[in-house]
Structures are given as C-alpha cells and as structure tokens.
Length: 215
Image (cartoon, rainbow, N blue to C red):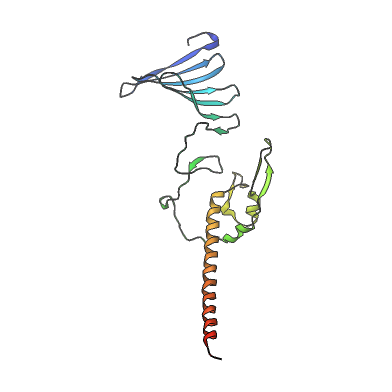
C-alpha cells in the first residue's frame, strides 16, 4: 500500500505478455473521493488503461483512458438499480440486441442455423388490426409516451407479440414483429385485390360481349 491515507493505492503484481507489453492492476482512491480499479497495459507507445470507478452518484463507470493518460471516455455506466448506460456507443449496422425475461443480454438471429422444428406459421394476423394505441405517463419519471399495452396484446390472443417477465406476466411488446403481421395482412389484401380484379375483368368481358350482340 502506498500514498497518503486519503489517496492510498494498492498495486497487484503485473505480468509480461508474449509481445513484450506489460500489464498491471491497481486499486486507488482517486482524488481522495472515488474508489477506482485500474488496468494498465504498458506498450511502446504509452500506457493506455481501463478504469472501473465508483462515481459521485454511487454508480459504477467503466472508463477508457488513452496511451498518453488523457481523454477519459466513459464507455459504460451501471447504476445502483442495475440500469445500463452506454453514452458513447458508435453508430453501426449489425444484429439487434435483445434482453430475455431474466435480464440476460444477447443477440437476435434469423438464421436457420439456430432453429429447429421450422414450419410455416398460420397465425390470425388480422387480429393485430384490433390493437388500439394508448398514450401514457411513465411512473416515476412522468415521461410521456404512446404505444400498445402488453396486456391488451395478450388479451387479443397475440402472445407472439408479447414479452413476458420471469414471473410470466406481460412485460413488453415485440414491435419488430409487427412488421411481419403487417406484411402478411398486406399480402392477404393483395390476394383479395387480385381476385377482385380478375372478377371485374371477367364481368367487363361479359358486358362487352352482351353489348356487341345484336338485339
């Protein structure tokens, strides 16, 4: 342990990597305020590091500091309630992230490689047309919003659009799947339009034939 009592630092012995870089870890009371776990990686160009810091609000920040020891960037904040904040996430394209009923984070894949018992779905897609959006204020924050209520969606028997919590209660709506419902409804409507167009064309031919028949 080194440093003054208000800014003490405990250093964990480091190790060399195969390419000659040196990694070390210490735990310090940064600025005599916040407990900080720091992971250093000494290279030929400097010593970049990662920090896990307990901030003034009692949350934990995961921070990256560049090789010159400057430009700290907060990459992740974990609140005391378990909420995650990613303030500097880059804009990218790729796979959607999902959270399951137990709070586990994972990616969503549409590949058949991850599926079994694959079959055509014959849902009553038209039930989605009965959904009624609601406006609301979020409890606690008062933030206004609008959308469908998970309980209303379940009541219509559209469980595929409902996300459930660990206790089996309706918890969220799978809005991304609404596009599938809308597309299937549109396909059915297009089929009806095509059938009606053929029927109208047949009637017009008959009318033309009648009109051309001498009286």
